[in-house]
Length: 212
Image (cartoon, rainbow, N blue to C red; front, top):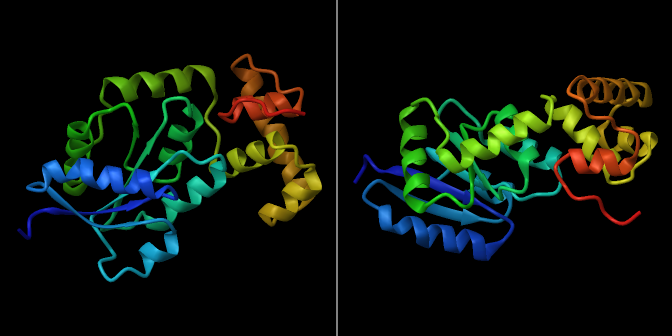
């Protein structure tokens, strides 16, 4: 059936990719999974690409990598949906900022995901279902809006990298990184959050603080 939505799944975890593909098979009258791959390059080189919708596993520690993966596949003919754990509140914001059509919590049903895929293919507006809406509301209440680059800087500082290494990894000058840090601190201070340590940066970037 040519009217079915063509879907690709991108996840570093093969079990997740295979499981999601099987889960979605129940709705094969609406869409078809044409590939499930682990690496972005494998999807870009796949003979079925471009597809209508790319579903990305959003459970990644590196927020910059998530933003880059979303941005790589957002095109005039391809929509991106990110699915992730409800514990990763920052991921919903970074995904939407990078151009994702939707972010869904993994606790949503297969039927809900199928509905969102159909909406993405039609170019309909995205209205988060109850579980995801609650997650995103919590994220907005707890964190200010940051740009993708600000999230990258924040995540790297939270992982313990000094300014010099952050600058090197992101291809920025140290002065530019310091400017980002000032903005990040100011935006958080505006909503009552003080960033005084690496642990503060790590916690509010969406993770739990790691051991010093």
